[in-house]
Length: 84
Image (cartoon, rainbow, N blue to C red; front, side):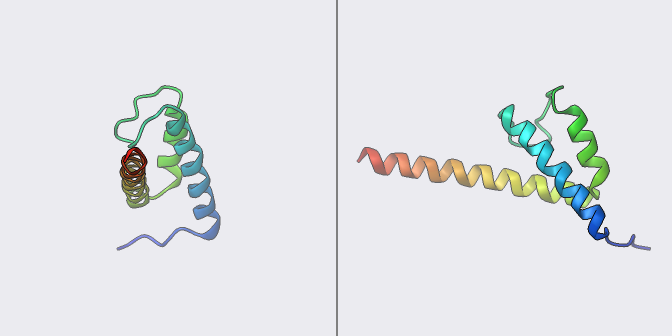
């Protein structure tokens, strides 16, 4: 049997935990949660993984990696255009 969807309050805690954790790994220049080995972010990662459903953690991670790669491509394209 499937579990019930998170309540509004649970979603809010999840998103706050995600945002706090992602800020930390941004500061450590880490892209994916799988690559994060920082002790600085360990507690935030734990809270993120506890407050969010596992499928959401994976989804947020996938979105983050895609966004970072997209930004890198855009920056590369812009810098190539500026050098021409």
